[in-house]
Image (cartoon, rainbow, N blue to C red; front, side, top):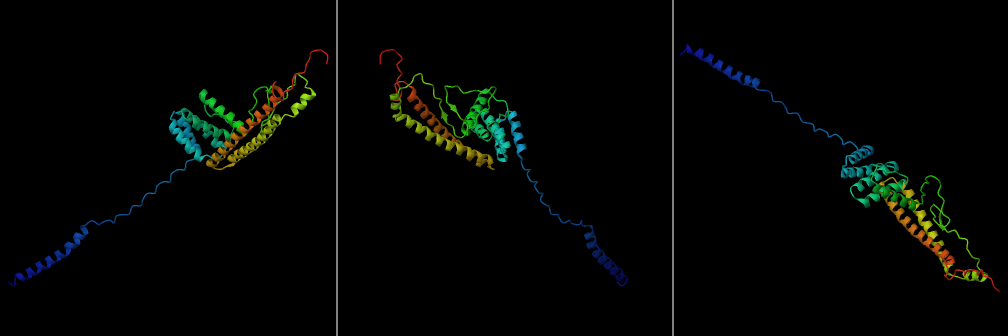
Length: 288
């Protein structure tokens, strides 16, 4: 019993040492846990800002590839980015051409009118069919009449015929019929009778009133077109142009009324059988 006690004590001490070393080795053998790093959210790159030239060029390319609907949508975006007459006019004319290709004739004429109000001497940017070209030139003539702009003369200067009234270009359109040389010499009594007639005076008064009103509305139309050219936004331009078109229409109606009244006054003097027409002087011989 005594001889085995030292051995037993040594075994116990060895067991305790082994027990103390095992947790340390286990901890050393265990892999170190890494703290997960936080992921930084990726920032989205800002969307590139569209410029007019790139959008307009894309619309032209789509038109050339016969993708008319996509080209029209791209032109609508270009119209929102356009600034100034130099950019708005080609957009409006291209819109008119594309709408004509899609069979939208009314919208095409409206787009042509918008572009020509801003620049009456503008030309179509591409070659189109004869029908579309005729529509474009008809709109140009209408816009020139509304604005009181005379078409440029081609070749020799054309002179107005002597038997037609001369129309003065400008904001105050008037008709001044040239009196024709009568083939007769009215007597003194006939001149007094024509002077007492009321109808020519009424017609001439109507001519003056309608001409003055036409000049007023024509001036209003021209002023609104000027405001449209100076406006900074497309919506303001369209509003001014619509008002200018309405005033120009009223001015044309009044101008027509003044012309009709002037021609009516002239007819009362020249048409035989009218109340104020003088009788032809007798050229036959005989005793008085």
